[in-house]
Image (cartoon, rainbow, N blue to C red):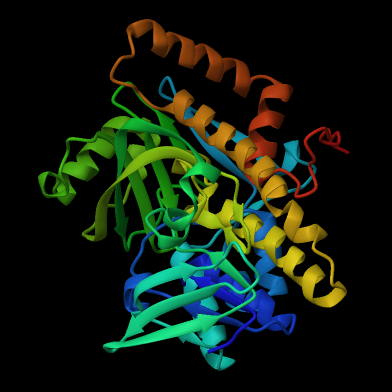
Length: 402
């Protein structure tokens, strides 16, 4: 088989890149080792930045998102038992975010790809990438007991943290940066109305909590838990009881409980690969970086990777220029590190660490007091949360609010 771009991984980044390339008349084949149902079963992020919304529109898959997504202009911060609101729209000149689950983003992209008759090969076993350091890269895989090969111009590694693409990069050409956090997030999904119309981020002496949502009738809640905790140790009742203990009295009283649809514990890590390009193979999304979910950056960073890579590939095929693909790694990493910094900072601010002493909680409370009562502090939180501009260069400055 011959294609222009071989995309490894049918998660949101791979599917979004494939859809954008198809709209631009560039041929791409997507390989995925799992089944479609498995891919759709991953319960992940739910907050979209404007750049991700714009890309869904550009890809022609935004109709359901706009019909069902919930536009949020702010969120609440709960600390010292009191809630205060971060007005995203006010402090960013009108910018907002949208609550629309990653599962739904994936579903929309899968449906569009199937409707267009574009090639996605699921349950592709033993995927391997070859010769990406030259001009004729190849991807091999096994399907139904037979071996196959795809010849291509470029390989897009969108196959996640444990994927084959980053693992295949030459060890002497790659550097990996990692911080593993000493706790996880216990997440519960339920068909219950959200406790609040916007998200609530909780700094509690008992640990972090997050009240999120996927729709007006489906809620997603998280609790900070030790990494030693096991999912079967947490009954639904135990989860709801602990969440109430971390909330303010009003939210605890308004909380509607119910049976869980899904429950899982996710570890937290900060991880970045440098560079993101190896010859004619590019890494995008979780293949190149992981952020703690505190700042709602994972899916949005994957989308911006796709934007930079897509623009570079269009420039290559339409204009014969390699300038865009040559700058891909530099542009993507500049934005990645800013988002990594925000996610790390927000995680440090809102969680309890095992080594923390009583003075650390005092420091956190004092910093939260400063941030929530300062125009500069609120602006910093808001502009990072809604997403920094795509063209925010290394030496550029954010424009002042109108």
